[in-house]
Image (tube, rainbow, N blue to C red):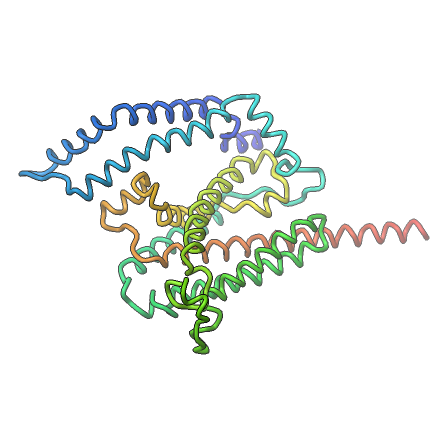
Length: 361
């Protein structure tokens, strides 16, 4: 009875057809409403602005353009929601997706990692990430011109270097720990992560250019807007990283919700070693708000609220600091799981050896 009560506390969002269908229909209705009545809605916004202030007060041309862009963008957001939600509301489509994911996501007979516990430790880590995210946002936004904090070779940059290097070591240790387990293929993912985090750390310090004072090659200097020996400051690469941070944080939040809802029903060890925890949600949300992109900027509710209270994004260091925190927590917790799997594999191997010796005797 107690187990049944515990399971019912976290409903299966994935299997809630009515919720997905309602979300899809509402998304379509919102899109159609905004597409058809966009001028009327814009006039209503202007009217609300005028009556909310004493005396004559109209929207500035810049603000009016931003509001108009937001009204034009939100229909596409509704269509995107409908494209995702309506198929999930269909039983056959959801069953096909479930069958496709079951070999990878569903708990198998040989899986041994215990379910996640969403208790005191989870809440404490979540609170810690929330406080760190809030303080980082306030400090890096309010002290944008403080060189020792946010300038080149400042504290925020060295935080990124330190977290990337630590994450590279942790990811490499995770790959090594997985070597003796049944998840040997998963180790290649962590080896790739270790290399990527190391390259990220080197990029942050311009591959040692500012430490040792060598010059920038002319070929790189012509396309690098900071005149440094880096790839991420090249225009096209900077745009790719910008989008990768946005979509990576969105997928991270989606993965965290999936891990939460699928936790007690059974999630494979591979997915527990891959999906992030929702403890990272505050940091991922902050990255999402800062890295929405030009197209969706006026459709970003979180960012609009932040701008309204004069706490909108300034500078570029906050997402990088949040990314450093996320990969550090992610690789540390996964290393603990990999060591647990290695201990169990070692125990099983020892037991098998003893059994073979006993049979020979």
